[in-house]
Image 1 (spheres, rainbow, N blue to C red):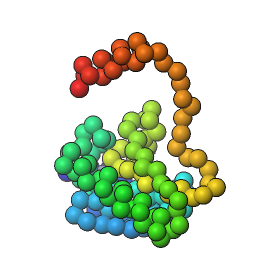
Image 2: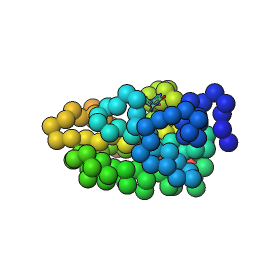
Image 3: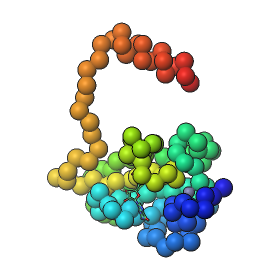
Length: 138
Ligand code: 5GP
Ligand code: ZN
């Protein structure tokens, strides 16, 4: 499936040029146009899914191993000391392109921290209540 007005569908299928670092039958991996660090890559499934909730698990099961391969190449090839794997779902989570994609962001010694949050506090009862709500919705 593809969406006619989806830029990542066009890029994934090679209809719009991109800086591609890897391609197979299921995915194209490209360099982000606005990289958070040198080598920031995006894993694009060739099939259109809006986000992780709508995606085919057979396809998404292949993403983490591929992210590991790409990250390893960033370490070996670019000298990255680590990498973040980031995947945004929904506007409130920072998703701006509504074709499922996974960021692989190389990190370098002394570079800025890019993915983080301020830890909050929660009591055990509230954690249990929250867990029950999620369990009930699974
Ligand atoms: P999101 O915020 O949706 O998780 O990430 C979208 C990412 O796609 C952003 O990091 C943005 O820089 C990148 N991006 C948006 N349009 C294009 C494009 O046409 N080509 C490439 N290579 N990256 C894009
Ligand atoms: Zn698409």
